[in-house]
Image (cartoon, rainbow, N blue to C red):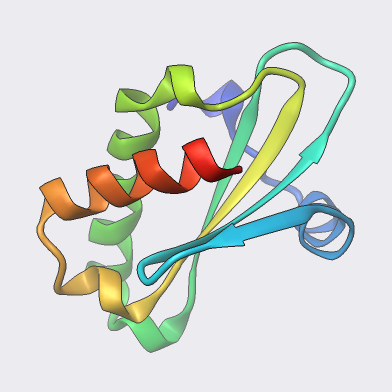
Length: 107
């Protein structure tokens, strides 16, 4: 995920979370909302319940990689916020990849 594809502003996060639709599973919660520009933008949210800073950054790296690998499943003209749940810290990468594919096909 490139820097220009990221949602950074706090107001944008709040808008997507409060006004957008959501889909979830055991490992993640994805909020999405339509926008005017073609390319999708992404934000990743990790709470302090996940662990210390090292663990939170590790989970963000894993989920950025998942987004890059499943780029074609994300719809154009949408913004996405991916909230990582605590159960994701113990899950293997393959399971997270399969769950992301399943959740995006659902939404």
